[in-house]
Length: 150
Image (tube, rainbow, N blue to C red):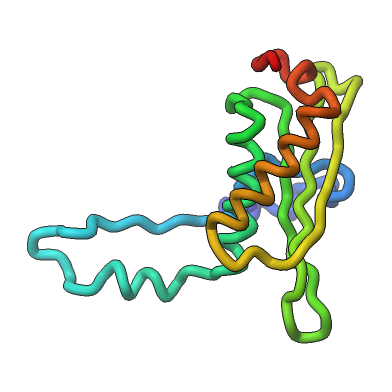
């Protein structure tokens, strides 16, 4: 995305698929913020901006960020997460959340995933991330990060 933004995507020598390396949690998601009670601001700006919200993207990013938070990983921890949507024809039916935690030298990985119905609420998306994180911690993810002890 960064290379595209600066007009240098043609210089990329290789594109890495998510199956080869998961991105950091929340990568590629954009957020727009505004002051809710701005003096002299446009009335209803928050409601206008809310129309830009995509519920599927919000559920995916919430699940990814919840996984990261439940792992209690810092910004330098080798953690990847990707929630992607599975469609059945025209309708989105399921969400798959994949997570990986690696040792700092990359020699050991804990990789797990879960698939289920698209979360209908922020709480459900957060729960999905926490559940996968708990499974990863049970498989030894905490010891790999070196930032957290059980």
